[in-house]
Image 1 (cartoon, rainbow, N blue to C red):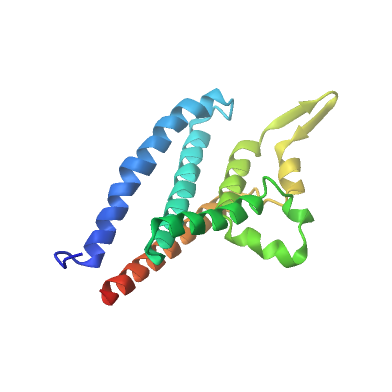
Image 2 (cartoon, rainbow, N blue to C red):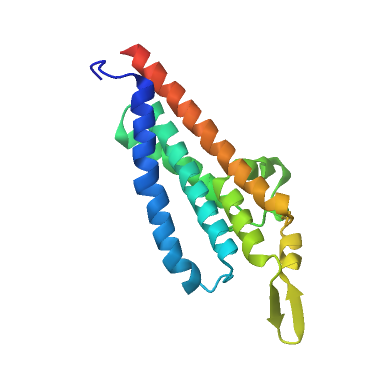
Length: 186
């Protein structure tokens, strides 16, 4: 604030100090405990995909929070403003509302949902190649993925990861630009 350091140094130190100790390490530790307790795929590759997806979802949410906090001057306003996009992203993420049954004029909201990309990546990781037994019927996980209109190819998984990375980069760049604007005002 007194001009002792540049905005880029502040932003980089803020991001790095938040990402490693507050995002990556706790996700890795808690995922190692919870993943196998939930009875998900026992393959180590699936576990790593789970950690990667959870980390990217967390970082995307963190990026959005950085953007909102850099855009407003008061803590109370930031709390109110950060809740709105997260509520919309939860509703249009595919877990609460079937995205195929959504009204066409609202369907664009699914493309900006962090939760949708994370959920789709986890669906592909966990459902692909699985068999589900119901009475005398055996259903492959791919049937569920098709019914939800989820691309379950190898690119389908990575497409969701790239989308999450894109959201992270866009939010972080916009947060940095917003910090530069605030710094110019002072």
